[in-house]
Length: 112
Length: 113
Image (tube, rainbow over all chains, first blue to last red):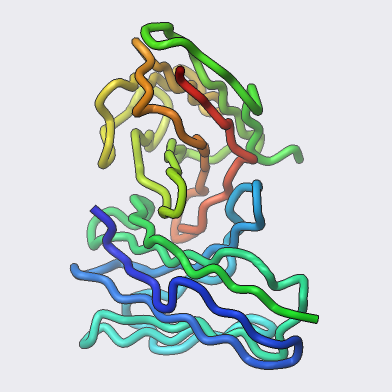
């Protein structure tokens, strides 16, 4: 079963705008990770946030985690056409920090 | 470093045939895993290994076998292919300690007719 569910399923924005994707999950986690997948390619790790953290930044990426609501959000600021991809959240349960369960993803399209 | 490599890139099998998907990593990672990705869905964990000689089942293990004789290699065997196993297969590896991020291979696109 899918632990994480992303929202929205698809998002289309103009270059330069910010993109926000949300992820909800069901059980207690050790960490939550976000990955990007370009069409026809493998997944690339973007950022990891641990269960005791509330916010992390990496370049144009900002991730928040609310364990009381079992939800996370990924913000991409000043988006570029090259950010067009599918974005997946993945959760690792307590006691198994690498055993990831993926959501179904958000397809982001950034229009030039 | 080549990272995580997978072969073949594409494969077509007939129902009932068997084959092995190859995965290798050159990062000396202890943890390796296999996922499948079906259209419009996220990845689902098939099998994983926490080190040479140790494997365990993930969410969807039926119809697949794995072994881990070396740190570098983690092959996935399809015992008797079925159309339901048509999918894209990804191998991933992860380092030890508190480095939980996973590095993915480019994938193998498998079609079973």
